[in-house]
Length: 410
Image (cartoon, rainbow, N blue to C red; front, top):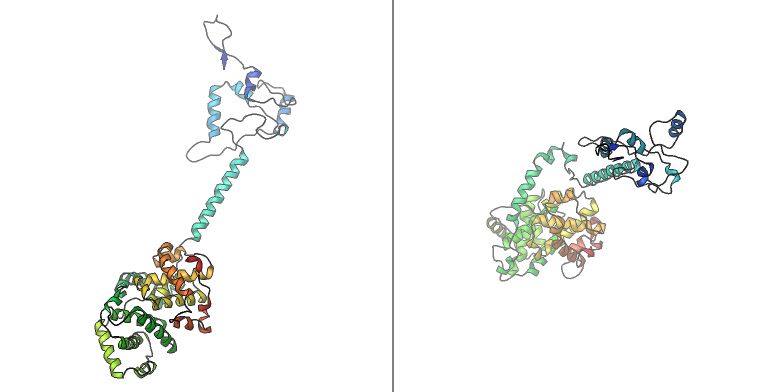
Protein backbone atom coordinates (compact mmCIF):
# COMPACT_ATOMS: atom_id res chain seq x y z
CA UNK A 1 0.00 0.00 0.00
CA UNK A 2 2.97 2.29 0.37
CA UNK A 3 6.23 2.95 -1.54
CA UNK A 4 9.60 4.41 -0.61
CA UNK A 5 10.22 7.49 -2.73
CA UNK A 6 13.76 8.09 -1.52
CA UNK A 7 16.27 6.70 0.91
CA UNK A 8 17.18 10.10 2.24
CA UNK A 9 14.44 10.03 4.81
CA UNK A 10 16.23 7.39 6.85
CA UNK A 11 14.44 4.56 5.03
CA UNK A 12 11.01 5.72 6.27
CA UNK A 13 8.16 4.43 4.13
CA UNK A 14 5.63 7.14 3.45
CA UNK A 15 2.06 6.24 2.40
CA UNK A 16 1.11 7.57 -0.99
CA UNK A 17 -1.87 7.36 -3.28
CA UNK A 18 -2.07 4.28 -5.47
CA UNK A 19 -1.87 4.65 -9.18
CA UNK A 20 -4.97 4.04 -11.25
CA UNK A 21 -3.36 0.96 -12.81
CA UNK A 22 -2.78 -0.54 -9.35
CA UNK A 23 -6.42 -0.10 -8.41
CA UNK A 24 -7.62 -1.62 -11.67
CA UNK A 25 -5.57 -4.83 -11.49
CA UNK A 26 -8.56 -6.98 -10.57
CA UNK A 27 -11.11 -4.92 -12.46
CA UNK A 28 -11.90 -5.34 -16.15
CA UNK A 29 -11.77 -2.09 -18.03
CA UNK A 30 -15.18 -0.39 -17.62
CA UNK A 31 -16.95 1.55 -20.33
CA UNK A 32 -15.33 4.89 -21.14
CA UNK A 33 -18.53 6.74 -20.34
CA UNK A 34 -18.04 5.97 -16.63
CA UNK A 35 -14.62 7.24 -15.54
CA UNK A 36 -13.31 6.15 -12.17
CA UNK A 37 -12.94 8.72 -9.43
CA UNK A 38 -9.48 8.89 -7.95
CA UNK A 39 -10.40 10.77 -4.82
CA UNK A 40 -13.40 11.86 -2.87
CA UNK A 41 -13.06 15.52 -3.78
CA UNK A 42 -15.59 16.00 -6.57
CA UNK A 43 -17.36 18.97 -7.92
CA UNK A 44 -21.11 19.36 -7.64
CA UNK A 45 -21.64 18.37 -11.29
CA UNK A 46 -19.54 15.22 -10.86
CA UNK A 47 -21.52 14.23 -7.80
CA UNK A 48 -24.77 14.59 -9.69
CA UNK A 49 -23.47 12.40 -12.50
CA UNK A 50 -22.46 9.71 -10.02
CA UNK A 51 -25.73 10.00 -8.18
CA UNK A 52 -27.66 9.25 -11.39
CA UNK A 53 -25.65 6.12 -12.17
CA UNK A 54 -27.03 2.63 -11.59
CA UNK A 55 -27.10 1.65 -7.89
CA UNK A 56 -24.17 -0.07 -6.37
CA UNK A 57 -24.66 -3.84 -6.22
CA UNK A 58 -24.09 -4.69 -2.61
CA UNK A 59 -25.28 -7.78 -0.77
CA UNK A 60 -28.25 -7.43 1.52
CA UNK A 61 -27.13 -6.73 5.07
CA UNK A 62 -28.70 -9.32 7.35
CA UNK A 63 -28.37 -9.49 11.10
CA UNK A 64 -28.13 -12.84 12.73
CA UNK A 65 -28.44 -13.81 16.39
CA UNK A 66 -25.08 -15.47 16.82
CA UNK A 67 -22.64 -14.00 14.29
CA UNK A 68 -22.27 -10.79 12.31
CA UNK A 69 -22.76 -10.78 8.57
CA UNK A 70 -19.69 -11.65 6.64
CA UNK A 71 -19.90 -8.54 4.50
CA UNK A 72 -19.70 -6.27 7.55
CA UNK A 73 -16.62 -8.08 8.86
CA UNK A 74 -14.84 -7.80 5.51
CA UNK A 75 -15.59 -4.10 5.14
CA UNK A 76 -14.37 -3.47 8.69
CA UNK A 77 -11.10 -5.23 8.00
CA UNK A 78 -10.67 -3.35 4.74
CA UNK A 79 -11.36 0.06 6.27
CA UNK A 80 -8.76 -0.62 8.95
CA UNK A 81 -6.09 -1.63 6.48
CA UNK A 82 -6.58 1.16 3.89
CA UNK A 83 -6.62 4.90 4.23
CA UNK A 84 -10.09 6.33 3.97
CA UNK A 85 -9.38 8.02 0.65
CA UNK A 86 -8.22 4.81 -0.95
CA UNK A 87 -11.22 2.95 0.47
CA UNK A 88 -13.47 5.53 -1.18
CA UNK A 89 -11.52 5.24 -4.38
CA UNK A 90 -12.10 1.47 -4.55
CA UNK A 91 -15.87 1.79 -4.18
CA UNK A 92 -16.40 2.20 -7.89
CA UNK A 93 -19.83 2.22 -9.56
CA UNK A 94 -20.00 -0.01 -12.63
CA UNK A 95 -22.80 -0.24 -15.16
CA UNK A 96 -23.64 -3.94 -15.13
CA UNK A 97 -25.89 -3.60 -18.14
CA UNK A 98 -22.86 -2.66 -20.21
CA UNK A 99 -21.34 -6.09 -19.55
CA UNK A 100 -22.36 -9.37 -21.10
CA UNK A 101 -23.23 -11.39 -18.04
CA UNK A 102 -23.17 -10.43 -14.44
CA UNK A 103 -19.72 -11.08 -13.10
CA UNK A 104 -18.02 -10.76 -16.52
CA UNK A 105 -16.92 -7.19 -15.85
CA UNK A 106 -14.83 -8.02 -12.82
CA UNK A 107 -14.10 -10.84 -10.44
CA UNK A 108 -16.11 -10.27 -7.30
CA UNK A 109 -14.36 -10.86 -3.97
CA UNK A 110 -15.32 -14.05 -2.14
CA UNK A 111 -17.39 -12.25 0.44
CA UNK A 112 -19.70 -10.59 -2.12
CA UNK A 113 -22.99 -12.43 -2.71
CA UNK A 114 -25.99 -11.34 -4.72
CA UNK A 115 -29.07 -10.23 -2.85
CA UNK A 116 -31.39 -12.16 -5.14
CA UNK A 117 -29.48 -15.39 -4.56
CA UNK A 118 -29.59 -14.97 -0.81
CA UNK A 119 -33.32 -14.31 -0.84
CA UNK A 120 -33.95 -17.25 -3.18
CA UNK A 121 -31.94 -19.59 -0.97
CA UNK A 122 -33.86 -18.38 2.06
CA UNK A 123 -37.17 -19.11 0.35
CA UNK A 124 -35.94 -22.55 -0.71
CA UNK A 125 -34.88 -23.35 2.84
CA UNK A 126 -38.24 -22.24 4.22
CA UNK A 127 -40.13 -24.22 1.60
CA UNK A 128 -37.99 -27.29 2.37
CA UNK A 129 -38.80 -26.99 6.06
CA UNK A 130 -42.51 -26.69 5.27
CA UNK A 131 -42.44 -29.81 3.06
CA UNK A 132 -40.56 -31.74 5.73
CA UNK A 133 -43.05 -30.66 8.38
CA UNK A 134 -45.91 -31.68 6.08
CA UNK A 135 -44.37 -35.16 5.63
CA UNK A 136 -43.99 -35.55 9.38
CA UNK A 137 -47.57 -34.44 9.86
CA UNK A 138 -48.71 -36.99 7.31
CA UNK A 139 -46.85 -39.81 9.05
CA UNK A 140 -48.06 -38.85 12.52
CA UNK A 141 -49.86 -41.60 14.43
CA UNK A 142 -53.61 -40.96 14.41
CA UNK A 143 -55.64 -41.10 17.60
CA UNK A 144 -58.13 -43.77 16.51
CA UNK A 145 -60.17 -43.42 19.72
CA UNK A 146 -60.84 -39.69 19.40
CA UNK A 147 -64.31 -40.25 17.91
CA UNK A 148 -65.49 -42.39 20.84
CA UNK A 149 -63.92 -40.58 23.77
CA UNK A 150 -67.33 -39.50 25.08
CA UNK A 151 -68.79 -43.00 24.73
CA UNK A 152 -68.54 -44.65 28.14
CA UNK A 153 -69.04 -48.11 26.56
CA UNK A 154 -65.84 -47.68 24.55
CA UNK A 155 -63.79 -47.46 27.78
CA UNK A 156 -61.15 -45.36 26.03
CA UNK A 157 -59.31 -44.73 29.27
CA UNK A 158 -58.69 -48.49 29.63
CA UNK A 159 -58.27 -49.52 26.00
CA UNK A 160 -54.46 -49.44 26.02
CA UNK A 161 -54.31 -51.51 29.20
CA UNK A 162 -56.76 -54.02 27.75
CA UNK A 163 -54.71 -54.63 24.61
CA UNK A 164 -51.46 -54.70 26.54
CA UNK A 165 -53.00 -57.52 28.53
CA UNK A 166 -54.15 -59.26 25.34
CA UNK A 167 -50.63 -59.04 23.91
CA UNK A 168 -49.17 -60.61 27.03
CA UNK A 169 -51.77 -63.37 27.31
CA UNK A 170 -52.11 -64.34 23.64
CA UNK A 171 -49.25 -66.81 23.97
CA UNK A 172 -51.46 -68.84 26.32
CA UNK A 173 -54.05 -69.25 23.56
CA UNK A 174 -51.46 -70.66 21.14
CA UNK A 175 -50.74 -74.35 20.71
CA UNK A 176 -47.62 -76.11 19.44
CA UNK A 177 -47.52 -75.97 15.66
CA UNK A 178 -46.72 -79.70 15.56
CA UNK A 179 -49.23 -81.00 18.10
CA UNK A 180 -50.83 -83.27 15.50
CA UNK A 181 -47.75 -85.49 15.75
CA UNK A 182 -49.05 -86.64 19.13
CA UNK A 183 -52.39 -87.73 17.65
CA UNK A 184 -52.19 -91.34 16.52
CA UNK A 185 -55.48 -91.48 14.61
CA UNK A 186 -55.70 -87.91 13.25
CA UNK A 187 -53.82 -85.82 10.72
CA UNK A 188 -53.71 -82.25 9.45
CA UNK A 189 -56.18 -82.80 6.62
CA UNK A 190 -58.83 -84.14 9.01
CA UNK A 191 -58.54 -81.02 11.13
CA UNK A 192 -58.87 -78.86 8.02
CA UNK A 193 -62.00 -80.70 6.84
CA UNK A 194 -63.60 -80.32 10.28
CA UNK A 195 -62.99 -76.56 10.51
CA UNK A 196 -64.03 -75.99 6.90
CA UNK A 197 -67.35 -77.71 7.70
CA UNK A 198 -67.79 -75.74 10.94
CA UNK A 199 -67.36 -72.47 9.05
CA UNK A 200 -70.35 -73.37 6.91
CA UNK A 201 -72.34 -74.45 10.00
CA UNK A 202 -71.48 -71.19 11.71
CA UNK A 203 -72.74 -69.25 8.71
CA UNK A 204 -75.91 -71.34 8.45
CA UNK A 205 -76.80 -70.61 12.08
CA UNK A 206 -75.92 -66.91 11.57
CA UNK A 207 -73.78 -66.83 14.68
CA UNK A 208 -71.53 -63.99 15.82
CA UNK A 209 -68.09 -63.75 14.25
CA UNK A 210 -66.19 -64.17 17.53
CA UNK A 211 -67.95 -67.52 18.09
CA UNK A 212 -66.16 -69.06 15.11
CA UNK A 213 -62.69 -68.03 16.29
CA UNK A 214 -63.31 -69.27 19.82
CA UNK A 215 -64.60 -72.60 18.43
CA UNK A 216 -61.37 -73.18 16.49
CA UNK A 217 -59.30 -72.16 19.50
CA UNK A 218 -61.12 -74.66 21.75
CA UNK A 219 -60.61 -77.47 19.23
CA UNK A 220 -56.88 -76.90 18.88
CA UNK A 221 -56.24 -76.47 22.60
CA UNK A 222 -58.17 -79.65 23.38
CA UNK A 223 -56.54 -81.77 20.67
CA UNK A 224 -53.12 -80.56 21.74
CA UNK A 225 -53.46 -82.27 25.14
CA UNK A 226 -55.99 -85.07 24.60
CA UNK A 227 -55.94 -88.14 22.36
CA UNK A 228 -59.04 -88.50 20.16
CA UNK A 229 -60.02 -91.27 17.75
CA UNK A 230 -61.08 -90.37 14.25
CA UNK A 231 -64.78 -91.12 14.63
CA UNK A 232 -65.02 -88.73 17.60
CA UNK A 233 -63.43 -85.76 15.84
CA UNK A 234 -66.71 -84.33 14.52
CA UNK A 235 -68.18 -84.70 18.03
CA UNK A 236 -65.32 -82.56 19.35
CA UNK A 237 -66.07 -79.92 16.73
CA UNK A 238 -69.81 -79.78 17.42
CA UNK A 239 -69.26 -79.63 21.18
CA UNK A 240 -66.64 -76.89 20.84
CA UNK A 241 -69.18 -74.88 18.83
CA UNK A 242 -71.74 -75.39 21.61
CA UNK A 243 -69.30 -74.16 24.27
CA UNK A 244 -68.34 -71.12 22.20
CA UNK A 245 -72.01 -70.26 21.69
CA UNK A 246 -72.64 -70.43 25.44
CA UNK A 247 -69.73 -68.05 25.97
CA UNK A 248 -70.41 -65.56 23.17
CA UNK A 249 -73.99 -65.78 21.96
CA UNK A 250 -77.18 -64.32 23.40
CA UNK A 251 -79.31 -67.04 21.83
CA UNK A 252 -77.62 -70.45 21.95
CA UNK A 253 -78.50 -73.23 19.47
CA UNK A 254 -80.11 -76.23 21.16
CA UNK A 255 -78.25 -79.52 21.34
CA UNK A 256 -80.77 -81.27 19.11
CA UNK A 257 -80.02 -78.83 16.28
CA UNK A 258 -76.32 -79.59 16.54
CA UNK A 259 -77.05 -83.31 16.46
CA UNK A 260 -79.21 -82.79 13.39
CA UNK A 261 -76.52 -80.99 11.41
CA UNK A 262 -74.06 -83.78 12.24
CA UNK A 263 -76.46 -86.20 10.55
CA UNK A 264 -77.45 -87.73 13.91
CA UNK A 265 -74.06 -89.36 14.22
CA UNK A 266 -74.07 -88.74 17.99
CA UNK A 267 -76.56 -88.81 20.80
CA UNK A 268 -77.47 -86.03 23.19
CA UNK A 269 -75.66 -87.83 26.02
CA UNK A 270 -72.47 -88.06 23.98
CA UNK A 271 -72.53 -84.31 23.28
CA UNK A 272 -73.03 -83.44 26.95
CA UNK A 273 -70.31 -85.86 28.08
CA UNK A 274 -67.87 -84.39 25.57
CA UNK A 275 -68.81 -80.92 26.79
CA UNK A 276 -67.79 -81.87 30.34
CA UNK A 277 -64.54 -83.43 29.12
CA UNK A 278 -63.49 -80.38 27.08
CA UNK A 279 -64.44 -77.88 29.81
CA UNK A 280 -62.50 -79.79 32.48
CA UNK A 281 -59.51 -80.35 30.19
CA UNK A 282 -59.27 -76.60 29.46
CA UNK A 283 -60.07 -75.77 33.09
CA UNK A 284 -63.04 -73.66 31.95
CA UNK A 285 -60.65 -71.10 30.50
CA UNK A 286 -62.39 -69.56 27.48
CA UNK A 287 -61.28 -65.96 28.00
CA UNK A 288 -58.15 -66.01 25.90
CA UNK A 289 -57.69 -63.56 22.99
CA UNK A 290 -58.40 -64.91 19.51
CA UNK A 291 -57.52 -63.30 16.16
CA UNK A 292 -60.97 -61.68 16.13
CA UNK A 293 -60.11 -59.53 19.18
CA UNK A 294 -57.14 -58.04 17.34
CA UNK A 295 -58.92 -57.83 13.99
CA UNK A 296 -61.42 -55.27 15.26
CA UNK A 297 -58.76 -53.08 16.82
CA UNK A 298 -56.39 -53.27 13.86
CA UNK A 299 -59.12 -52.56 11.32
CA UNK A 300 -59.88 -49.40 13.23
CA UNK A 301 -56.21 -48.42 13.05
CA UNK A 302 -56.27 -49.08 9.30
CA UNK A 303 -59.27 -46.75 8.90
CA UNK A 304 -61.01 -49.54 7.03
CA UNK A 305 -64.15 -49.40 4.97
CA UNK A 306 -66.57 -52.27 4.41
CA UNK A 307 -64.63 -53.63 1.45
CA UNK A 308 -61.35 -53.87 3.35
CA UNK A 309 -63.08 -55.36 6.38
CA UNK A 310 -64.80 -58.16 4.47
CA UNK A 311 -61.68 -59.04 2.48
CA UNK A 312 -59.59 -59.12 5.68
CA UNK A 313 -61.99 -61.58 7.33
CA UNK A 314 -62.05 -63.71 4.17
CA UNK A 315 -58.26 -63.99 4.25
CA UNK A 316 -57.99 -64.78 7.95
CA UNK A 317 -60.75 -67.43 7.76
CA UNK A 318 -58.73 -69.12 5.05
CA UNK A 319 -55.94 -69.31 7.62
CA UNK A 320 -58.20 -70.94 10.23
CA UNK A 321 -58.44 -74.01 8.01
CA UNK A 322 -54.69 -74.29 7.44
CA UNK A 323 -52.77 -76.22 10.10
CA UNK A 324 -49.45 -74.59 9.23
CA UNK A 325 -50.73 -71.17 10.32
CA UNK A 326 -50.74 -72.29 13.96
CA UNK A 327 -47.14 -71.12 14.19
CA UNK A 328 -48.29 -67.48 14.21
CA UNK A 329 -49.81 -65.64 17.16
CA UNK A 330 -53.38 -64.31 16.88
CA UNK A 331 -52.19 -60.69 16.69
CA UNK A 332 -49.75 -61.44 13.89
CA UNK A 333 -52.41 -63.31 11.93
CA UNK A 334 -54.77 -60.35 12.28
CA UNK A 335 -52.15 -57.77 11.29
CA UNK A 336 -50.99 -59.87 8.32
CA UNK A 337 -54.55 -60.39 7.09
CA UNK A 338 -55.26 -56.65 7.12
CA UNK A 339 -51.91 -55.88 5.48
CA UNK A 340 -52.59 -58.47 2.77
CA UNK A 341 -56.08 -57.10 2.17
CA UNK A 342 -54.80 -53.51 1.86
CA UNK A 343 -52.14 -54.57 -0.62
CA UNK A 344 -54.74 -56.58 -2.57
CA UNK A 345 -57.12 -53.64 -2.89
CA UNK A 346 -54.55 -50.88 -3.41
CA UNK A 347 -52.22 -52.79 -5.71
CA UNK A 348 -49.07 -51.88 -3.79
CA UNK A 349 -47.53 -52.42 -0.36
CA UNK A 350 -49.03 -50.10 2.22
CA UNK A 351 -48.58 -50.08 6.00
CA UNK A 352 -49.04 -46.77 7.78
CA UNK A 353 -47.36 -45.52 10.95
CA UNK A 354 -50.70 -45.76 12.73
CA UNK A 355 -51.05 -49.45 11.82
CA UNK A 356 -47.47 -50.11 12.85
CA UNK A 357 -48.01 -48.39 16.20
CA UNK A 358 -51.25 -50.14 17.15
CA UNK A 359 -50.36 -53.60 15.84
CA UNK A 360 -46.79 -53.59 17.09
CA UNK A 361 -45.56 -55.06 13.80
CA UNK A 362 -43.43 -53.48 11.10
CA UNK A 363 -44.05 -54.26 7.46
CA UNK A 364 -41.07 -56.56 7.09
CA UNK A 365 -42.25 -58.65 10.06
CA UNK A 366 -45.49 -59.50 8.24
CA UNK A 367 -44.14 -60.46 4.83
CA UNK A 368 -43.55 -64.18 5.51
CA UNK A 369 -47.08 -64.67 6.86
CA UNK A 370 -48.52 -62.46 4.12
CA UNK A 371 -47.02 -64.56 1.33
CA UNK A 372 -48.72 -67.67 2.69
CA UNK A 373 -52.03 -65.81 2.86
CA UNK A 374 -51.71 -64.73 -0.76
CA UNK A 375 -51.09 -68.36 -1.75
CA UNK A 376 -54.20 -69.48 0.18
CA UNK A 377 -56.21 -66.74 -1.52
CA UNK A 378 -55.00 -67.89 -4.93
CA UNK A 379 -56.02 -71.52 -4.25
CA UNK A 380 -59.21 -70.75 -2.30
CA UNK A 381 -61.63 -72.05 -4.90
CA UNK A 382 -59.73 -75.24 -5.65
CA UNK A 383 -59.22 -78.53 -3.82
CA UNK A 384 -61.45 -80.03 -1.14
CA UNK A 385 -61.51 -77.17 1.38
CA UNK A 386 -63.70 -74.62 -0.37
CA UNK A 387 -66.14 -73.73 2.40
CA UNK A 388 -64.63 -70.29 3.03
CA UNK A 389 -64.61 -69.49 -0.69
CA UNK A 390 -68.28 -70.43 -1.07
CA UNK A 391 -69.21 -68.36 1.98
CA UNK A 392 -67.49 -65.19 0.72
CA UNK A 393 -68.59 -65.69 -2.87
CA UNK A 394 -72.05 -64.31 -2.06
CA UNK A 395 -73.64 -60.88 -2.06
CA UNK A 396 -73.83 -61.01 1.75
CA UNK A 397 -70.05 -60.69 1.82
CA UNK A 398 -69.72 -58.45 -1.25
CA UNK A 399 -68.25 -61.29 -3.35
CA UNK A 400 -64.91 -60.82 -1.59
CA UNK A 401 -63.74 -64.25 -2.80
CA UNK A 402 -63.70 -62.92 -6.37
CA UNK A 403 -61.04 -60.30 -5.57
CA UNK A 404 -57.83 -60.81 -7.50
CA UNK A 405 -55.00 -61.97 -5.18
CA UNK A 406 -51.99 -59.71 -4.57
CA UNK A 407 -49.61 -61.83 -6.61
CA UNK A 408 -46.88 -59.17 -6.52
CA UNK A 409 -46.30 -60.00 -2.84
CA UNK A 410 -45.17 -63.55 -3.65
